[in-house]
Amino acid sequence: MSRNDKNMKPKIPIVDEGDNIIGYKDRDSVKKEDIYRVSALWITNSNGEILLAQRAFTKSHNPGKWGPSVAGTVEEGEDYKDNIVKEAEEEIGLKNIKPLTGPKIRRSGEYNYFGQWYLLEINKPIDEFIIDRREVESIKWFLKKDLLKEIENHPDKFLENMKQLVELFCK
Image (cartoon, rainbow, N blue to C red):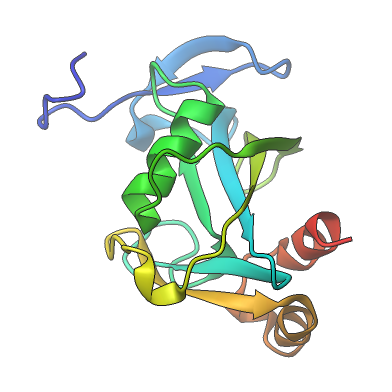
């Protein structure tokens, strides 16, 4: 399939418990028991701040919730790293990034996926990011202590695992 064919949506790889591709499906036909691949980017700066993105209110999963700087579902023909580099450019305008590979997680429940994390430190003012409003409502730099307090006081504003992610990545 050509990525230039706008009439066809890319398929996403379906994997087994070992993260081996066993087939491909249209995003809309993925069932709860299907395991897919997600990549995510944890961005910090030299001031010790964490960049979070608020998901667009039009998103089908967790609309309006604050989560990682960038995240995306891996598509056919991509590996995790290809996907995160593409998503970083599409969602917040970062080009030619060279993120470090972080931990890979396995989530099951409402969403069933392998998630490969990437890490990036960048010093960039908020107004220099180029946001795709179809994906991201807004972005903000947070200090760890302020973010943990905000998650504690308003957990419904964040993805359910944000506190654990902050503790994992900000030791």
